[in-house]
Length: 318
Image (tube, rainbow, N blue to C red; front, side, top):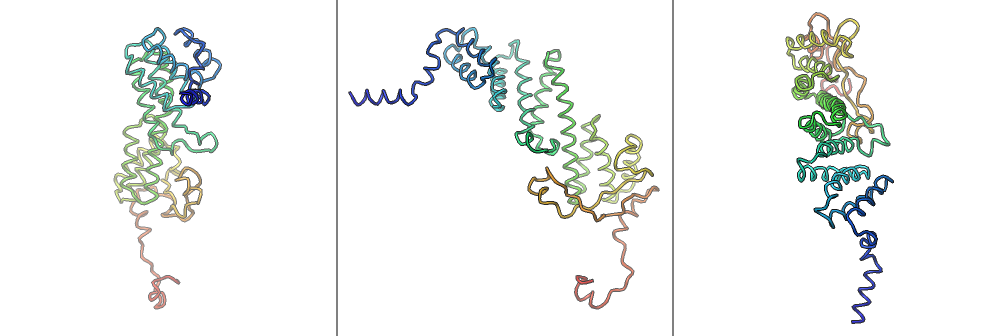
């Protein structure tokens, strides 16, 4: 018996009753809620989360239970526990679909994904947001869309709408980056589809002009001259100042992608540059159609007579 008593005492010494001690002087639901609120207001977010959890476990059907569940969403968010914030918001929406604060839960759910999309690394490195995986951005856009669809007059609607514009621009720009990636690897059909997708699904975003330019270039590379001319006319008519059109109105063909830098490689294309200097084709598209001229320039046979040495060495030393 003495041994058991010693073991029980030891458990207490090593923190077995630590959680109980934190709330030893709290007995009523109001006291738990007030402490959690005070901790939240003093920016002790971890402490407020623990107190909200204790409140809900002790008084699951109390007067402050619903309020604790919605306020802990904010506490998780401010504690930078974004996944927990999303989960808490989801739980509140599921348990209280008719609650007056459910629009706030939708908003915080979208905001958590929006913030997580920024990522920890962006605080220290100049990473282009439009080159990141769009998963969280798509989730955030969907959450904000649901908020606007269900609660268009919510006080959070205006902010959600503004964030959706930003997200939509980024999602469109991401598609352009993917299209450029395909062009760099001569996957012109895949790049063309990405450009078309941007034009069809992201109207009124800055990336639409780039989508049309990608279509022009891909049609040129594929030898679809008529479609290239049609797309170029569309580009000139709607975006005459686009970077792919020079002062003479000619379409500028991009240079070949060669020898990516080490920084570009290790960062999976997020940092550094991957553009080489040697041109893949003439730098300008002739004004009068001329699609075939651009393609055929690369295929023109050499008129110079090859020596026997050049033939035997397969041109390696020519």
